[in-house]
Length: 77
Image (cartoon, rainbow, N blue to C red; front, side):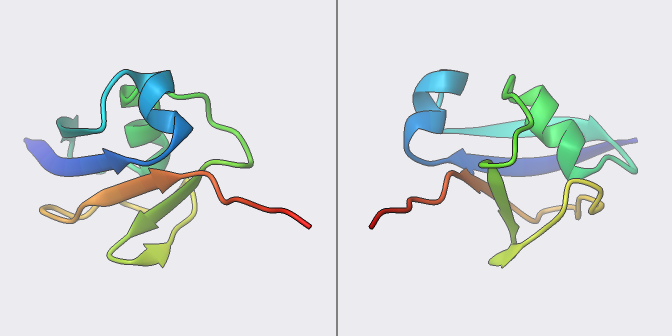
């Protein structure tokens, strides 16, 4: 059975992936790392993922109907 989720990419990640938002169909039991790969993004330390407004780890299970937001935090000094 497939798991449908909505992903939204912010900032430079939009150019990297070639889209701003997309609906993904992934297998049941898929994790955040699977969604990152399905978007064609490199899994790197400066890629943060929010699920339900909370930062989640790469091994967090995806929840049906729950959206993901991918972004890179901005730092400065």
